Length: 396
Length: 68
Image (cartoon, rainbow over all chains, first blue to last red; front, side):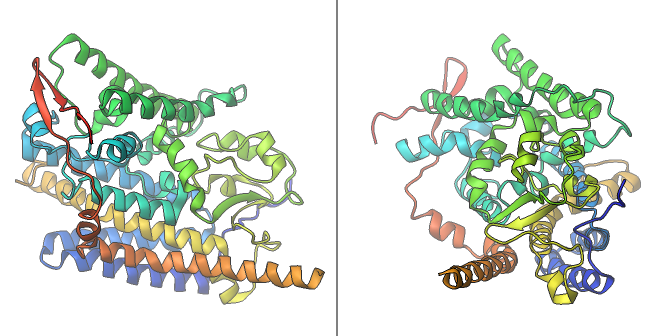
């Protein structure tokens, strides 16, 4: 067995430089936005320290999948701990009432965008009860999505999505997988694409955000309409079952992100549109011994034996870095379209390491995700402090 | 011919690195522009309106369009 080489590792000097640059930019963007709120600034500073440590560990060790996962799960927990209490503070519960729908007060999330796009273009209005310019309204979310697509492609699903970390969190809880995926039918990974087509057409015909109404598992940790009749109870049963099955139980048993890899229609949408992003995950055919360790461990089922023999991950790859962590030969790497793969793990001095495709991708992705998550994680830190001091998650 | 191909290939590699570097620099710019009002400025030029939701038969539904 050859000694394991980590292709994404950097020298101490380069790691310190990249970490310092990241800390400076994060401080400017996170703390700069909270100048008028000292408590948020203090919480932001704590999160900044966390992100700085994660940055150093990623660059120094090259264990992108491992340390990104800690960041991503923290982000998801922070999102839940800030969003649910915020709903309780403003509405008294997680229920979305008719009054809020009529006044267009429902926060929009990125999962809705593929469904509302066609009706918006054809009829010129939104089929989701949200405002155009409110904080979590249509245009801010569209702007966020455009940026995420440009900077991350489908890497959004492993570096920026505030839901993706939830099944990542559950997939990391048990030390070993209980259900083996050796006999897994990889055809199932095409389901999100078919599902995307169905919900987009269904939403256009029904003029209703059908994925939100019927299927979205993350309503279980955000908001949902209080069931008052049998149909609503059926809808509630469906999304709660999907949440428990695909976000909690299967990730626990398989140690894979089953919701992201086998269900999420937005992930499928992002996989296609995200091709505009210039980064790819490629496999060096000369180094690869076809041991298929990466195939067995890819969290989103984006590596198959066929993909490995072709030398690249599938379109659904979320650039999480797990395959690079586990490859015993260091044969898998982040690459840029049209740029030859690196031969050596050592990147040719300081500038050689700074201007490597993996360095540029990880730096941009962590900066994007770090700033995006800062508000949610900082608020959750304040809520945890409040719980410890005053016995309540609620700040008001 | 091989030389010309080599030059274009090297230029292509340089362009990709330049693009990658630009994307990294654009991340802070992206967040700084978020609160600059650019979203409203551009958004107001796009002909999309908020939906009108109505209560019908005890359920809240979007008011369907007659024609655009």
